[in-house]
Amino acid sequence: MEQFILISYIICLSILFIFGAHGFVMVYHYYRHRNEVEGDLPLNETPMVTIQLPLYNEMYVVRRLIDASCVIEYPNDKLEIQVLDDSTDETVDLVASIVREKQAQGYNIHHVRRSNRQGFKAGALKEGLTTAKGEFVAIFDADFIPKPEFLRKTIPYFFQDEKIGMVQTRWEHLNGDYSLMTRTQAMALDGHFVIEQNIRNKAGYFINFNGTGGVWRKATIIDAGNWQADTLTEDLDLSYRSQLRGWKFKFLRDVTSPAELPAEINALKSQQFRWTKGAIETARKLLPMVWKSNIPFRIKFHSTFHLTNNIVFPFIILASILNVPLTFIKHGGQFNAYFDFMSVFVLAFIGSFLFYLYSQKDIYTDWRKRIMLFPVFMAGSMGFAVNNSKAVLEGLFKRKSEFVRTPKYGIEGKKQSWNDKKYVPIKFSWMVIVEVVLALYCFFGVLSSLYYLEIAAVPFQLLFTAGYGFVAMLSVQQVFEARRIKMAQLNLVVEPLAV
Image 1 (cartoon, rainbow, N blue to C red):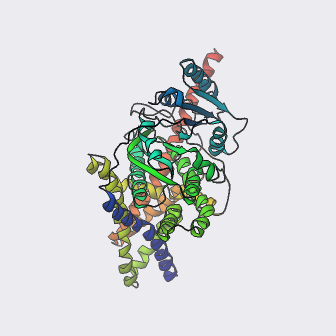
Image 2: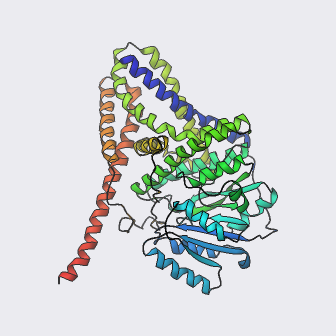
Image 3: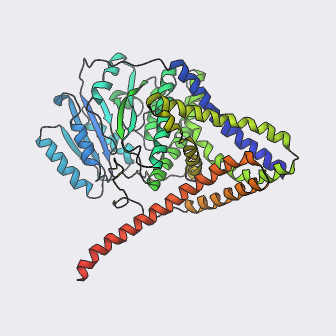
């Protein structure tokens, strides 16, 4: 039994090591390409552009999105805005009112409604494309505020190379300093954009459209088979299909699109679930095409890492579970050679640290302060393992689920609150119970390690305990706070009626 636990643990660590050590590969390419800086290109041509704004029940943010889209610096006669509104609440009337207002001011803007949500976001984008007049299509989700210079900074790249099919900008964070949760989210996204997207693009690997904050050549979308709704990450799916067709993508690190981060844990869970499951679905769908294509082996290999990196989450859970019995096994002293060998896996942790260190150092002057959050980020990543493992398993076993959008509340400053808003969930998932049980179990591991003086095991067990516990605590706390406010609001409505 002891050998079975040890072998299982080594397998888990090996998988985590392989994906964690990939951070060293990214850092290597970062050093190779860090001095390659893109200069601004002049906007010599102004082709017709359609801006698509896909919405679903976004009453708190739709005004700022449409306002920002209308003041983008581009000739008015060459710009069309489609508000692709699948809403089922007051957002419909609000959008209709705003669109009428903008039309009266001379903007070429349309309120596009469908009779159903077939295909969810992918379906809305595809239907909008049938009437889009633009040669190029920019897309912004409801939580974004496009900058006025967005098209002026992105469109010129399409004329630099006729094979460029998509230009993606880096996300900025409107509320990155709102809370500890948003600060750790910002770190995760900075790592993705500053290192992964930026360096993959410069090194010649495939990258992905991030669903928003980018511009497509309309011909690329059509040539690649259009938007498809058979995965929850229609953006990743179309990105790979396009690049397999020979289209090139361009990532602009220094052109940014500000966005609102989820300020509430259950909204973040739904977002992470969708991204994780969709990536697994896309990997299952497209990896056979990747390996059958005639692209270079190094791109096939790297694409496999890119599409499958979420597979680590079930192994994070297994590692956290196996950590506890390993404390007792190690104390027995019979397998010291195994444990000496396993110390090499700490290198994966170092690779991840360097990955996020350079992402912070690259864009922030206060990067030393920001990187201090790395242990919190690691604990949070471990804490999300239950939520994301469920997504991985559903993706692997082809269990279909609805596209659950991430609610946005218009949170930009620290003084704003989300818990009195309409879209806040008032139920929590059964997964919270699993998180609580795992937190208590890992805490038992901490106590056991301290008792047997296995001090080397304590830091990782503390990270697991803190991660599971923090995610579970926030999930419960924020739901109960939302329920309390909902009840208070109902009482305010009922009491005047009773009088």
